[in-house]
Image (tube, rainbow, N blue to C red; front, side, top):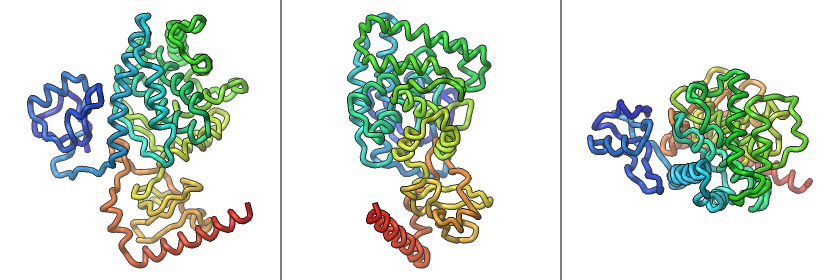
Length: 392
C-alpha cells in the first residue's frame, strides 16, 4: 500500500481505502481502478492524496465496523468544519450540540474494543481531523471510566473547541509539527486564546456547556509543553481525558511529514509519564482500543518477529505470540518467558493498520501442536481467573 499525493495520481491506480463525500456517502469504493474522470472528481473534492494498492497487491481485509468508522470520521469532520467556520464569523454554530451527542452515542457506549484508524492529515485539515479524533477517543475513555452521558457530551464538546485557535496559526509554524521553539509555542497559545475569545464565554451565546468552556480554558493554559511541574490539582476529569486523548491522537496520526507512532508506543509513553497523563484515563484508553490484537505482527526485543495469537485482557504487553524464526509459541504472561523476550513494537502498514489478516493467521494456528498449546494456556488462564474471582 502506498500513499500518492493528488498531483501524482495516475489512471489505472487502484484505491486501497474508500472515499466518502462530506455527507458520508460513498464516492469510490476500495479496489476502484481510477479513470481520468475519477481523478478530476478526487481533485475537485480537495483531497491531498489517496492510498493506492500496488499492482499485484490483494485488497486488504476490513470489517464493517472499520468501514463505518472511516465513514463517520469524514462525516463528522465536515460537520465540525461548518460549525467552527460559523463561530469564526460570529454566526450560530450549525449543529455543534447535536454533533457532540452523535459522537457520544456512537462511541460512548461500546461494549468492545475498536481498531482506531486515522486518515492522513495536512496543515489545512489538521484541526478538524485532530479534533474529531480526540472527541472519539474521549467518548470511549469516558465510557470506560463510567462517566454520565451529559459529562461525556461536555468533554466531547471541549474536544471540538480547545484547538480552534490552530486555524489562525501561520502556515510556517504549522508545517513544523511538534518541532517548534518556546517562542513559537507562545505564539500558538496567543492564537488559541484569541480563538477562545470568539466563543464569548462570559455571555455564552452559543449555549456551550459551562464545564466544556472550563476544560477548554485549562487545555489552553496547559499548552503544548510537557511541564511536569505545572499545577494539575484543579483539573476537571474531562481535562485529564482530553490531555490523554490529545497526546494519543497526535502520536499516532499520519501526515505527509512524519511517520506515526504505533498505539503501543503511544500508550507506553504516557504510562511512563504519569505526572503528565493521568493513570485512570490512560488505563481507560487501553481498555477501549485494540493495541495488540490477534493477527498483528510484532517486533520482539530479541530481534525476532512474531504474530499475536491471543490478546491478554489484563495486560496488553503480555499476549501469546508465535515466534517466526523458531516456530515457537511464547506466553509473555509467564515471568520466565518475559524475562528473556518482550514486545518491542507493533508492525504497521502505511495507513497504520496491522499487517496480518484473518486468512493468513489461520496458516499459523492450524498446526495441531500449536492449537494444543494455545488450548493449554487458555485452560490455565481460565483456572487462574476462576480462583481470583473466588478470592475476591
